[in-house]
Image (cartoon, rainbow, N blue to C red; front, side):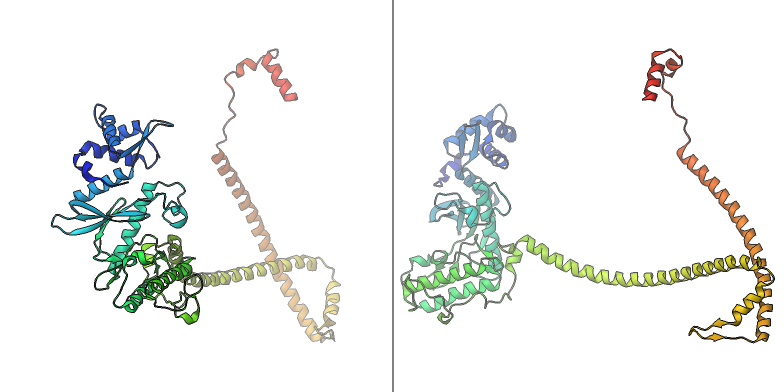
Length: 490
């Protein structure tokens, strides 16, 4: 659509208010209902419908009444909103002639109040010449539904970000001035597209400069993806300036090598065809892609000069990869912390194990004491002949190796004396243990009583609630009592 800014002079505040209302409604609607436009604009006395008729006459909005009565913005109306905003900011004051046109944008001259001439690029995605935006560009990212105006806005924001970052790193690009909606304001490049140049004084030097730009971009982590004679500007001094950046991708892109080789191939092909710089040509007119041809290869380039693809979130280096890098750094930090925690846990576990060993020793000693106390009553209940048998058994004790050892009678008598004294001490211990067992039984009974009281206090011991109509069931011959009896039997 041709940009005619003459109608911009006669538009009032109400006209821009209604245009803004249509833009806001198009966030959730393809065709904005007229009632919603009226509600968002908030004009009095039905003034919205009168303004819509005026905008429709100037082709700033499109009317659609197939499913319901609604309106949508056209590219001309979107242009007027962007131009009005930039004029209010003081970026420029007048719009001049059209100086360029492409499959995705139109370029116009604009001038500031002091007479400085700038370039205004209006992105116009959705033309019949280039509708494969969803497959050729990554503006949509994870989105499924899209609007051509919204895609144009995303393309403008992306180009402005790339242009500003490349200019900060001293690349030969136009100076980015400002951006609003789908409009990008940049400095005007004094020169001509390379495709219009027929003769060069030093074509070899220009060729080397252009190849150096492609390699330098790759070293900074970016690939142009559309680096050809249409996007290279050359002035009278043969200074090279590159333009058109929305399609740039990262060197981490899965097709990065293919895009890099394609850019190199376009430059070789053009200079071979126009200036006859190379003689190695295959049948289709393009150079052979051999190692002996001297072409720069993608694998030989080292990304050492910076990470612009990470800063700009270029296609191929997405936020997901950035999150993975940050996650990897966090995991390393967590591993260091976990190692220190593991050391502390090992110390505590060692202390616990030592305490557990002490407890196990105590338990084993208690078990041994129980076994000894179980053996003692059996020894006490034996007859008088038992010591003799015991002495006989001890007299013929076996060694661990299986050999029998005999003991002296003197040692046997000493052992019997010791045994008698030990039995007396054991009887005293048994009597003490019996008293302790009695005390333990009393304590357990008291504890059980206290536990039962605590459970009863927790439960409350509430009485079962009777129904309000329970007095009706008192009689033996009543119907309710019969029903209850039958239900109990069932």
